Image (cartoon, rainbow, N blue to C red; front, side, top):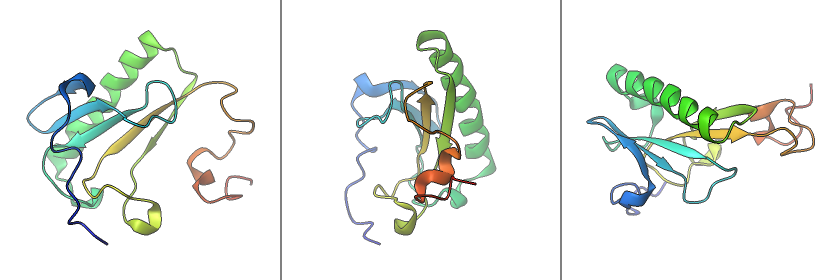
Length: 126
């Protein structure tokens, strides 16, 4: 795993920041998979979500609720996927932990059954 790459979150453009506090930034994803796709990024630089402190997890939970309320009001999605990629095998490409809040809309995919299980093709079909 090459963690020597400069972290794109460390110099976040102000126009992408939705909210911030002493523990984290909340930003719109630069390459959204759906309208409103948002990232919750701890300020402390760690690659692995399992290394986060209880305080960071608490702040992330509060931010997820805040993001949901804002997106419910402005975009009215029909559902959400929440995800963290940990490690190359899981698809992690930016080695600064971040939580994806992905709004979902009725009809955005043909068969949404299985949700996050579909990161492995066919695993959502049960």
